[in-house]
Length: 432
Image 1 (cartoon, helix red, strand yellow):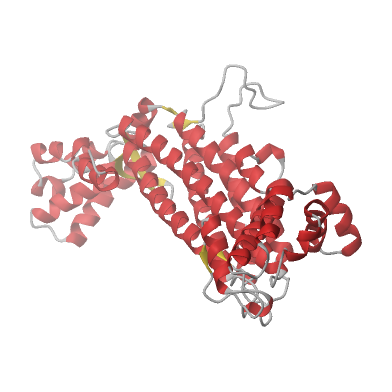
Image 2: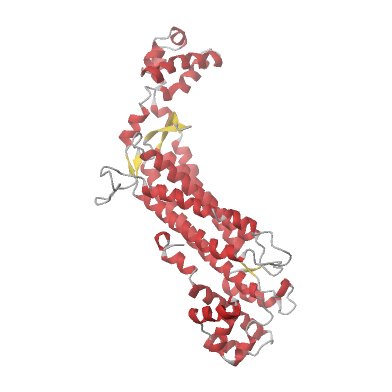
């Protein structure tokens, strides 16, 4: 997590001050519940809220001696609270604080990521409708296939990020659990009602069985979801990188007046943002395998997961937040070249209509095998010699025996391929 790829709101979730504030709230809310149950004096719970404070530097100094972060925090807290601090952390274990805090942090991070996706969805929808009927070539294996529209391309990405939004909502629900169950999770020294109180206060739900830690399948699901979202970011970024290639140049990242593309070549306009997004996606996915490996902890708990989560929690969420915001900016300001799209559509002399010609031949009684052979026979000289597909078809006796000149002319209508665009848009956006 470095400032270059961090946004303040997400990074703030992982700051030491924010983490210790959540720890304090967990302990203070637990004291409130314990006081209501008569386990500790109500005056003690009140004192925790009124005098409770901490200093990050002091906690770090204590931890350097005691080698335990939660004990260091509780020691610093007691320095402010005074004698009533003996009632803090009654019946609790360190994981109650650490795991519940992580649940709060990941839940808050998920909320930001959902907001990020909403912003991206809005940009994709706006640009999709802008280019709803802008014709462009569809490609399979990176080779010209059949016509689509640029709006349809963007609609497909919109649908994908709708799914990603739903995945993030589910992942947030999966991770938002609270564990205040004490050593080995039996509630032997703390009433389950304390957990219920703390969970409600922090916007979480009680973990059904916490052993001593919240089960890490939840975290694996969360980081796997981030990995899927990052992969979608990369897919869209890769598409833009291809479209920006000099030989294609159907769309490109916005290039500002004073921007420089290369230290050596003043003419360069490079897809630096989308290349950066490709790299950032790799970093987010880097968290997935360690999160999966964290699931298999020993018995009721161990801390092999701890060092992993201290790194992947902030790194993955901060990086994905930055990537989604950057991608939204790219889409919002993407420069589109419809004239180049049209030129590329025409580049292969009409070959993009080959399937329609083949199907028309079958409708006239030609077998599919013969129709394929005839169309391919006329198509290959277009590839090899730059000839015109329709001209070659018109000169082929077997083709013209089945299809008239008017028939052939009608088969090269670009609008034929866009007749169901409204249907697809209604499916994606609920409107056309």
